[in-house]
Amino acid sequence: MKTFLEAFDAYNKRFPEGFPTVPLLDNGDEWCIKIIDRCLKEGKDVYEMGYLKDDPDVLY
Image 1 (cartoon, rainbow, N blue to C red):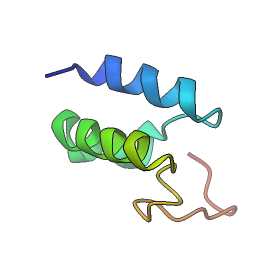
Image 2: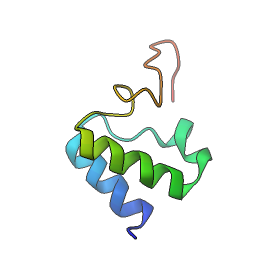
Image 3: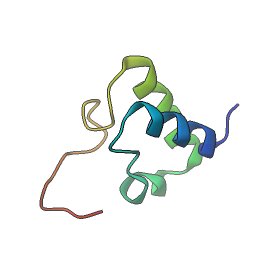
């Protein structure tokens, strides 16, 4: 099993906008690793996968 930091780095290399830790990390490292793995497999970021809404009025 990879660590959260390994998954985080892989996500950030693939998606230039980076992984939004503030709204998602509250779900725990294991959950985030699963989400990151799914995003990398599908080639879609957390917004495209529906895990987070892209709300321009919210600052993270």
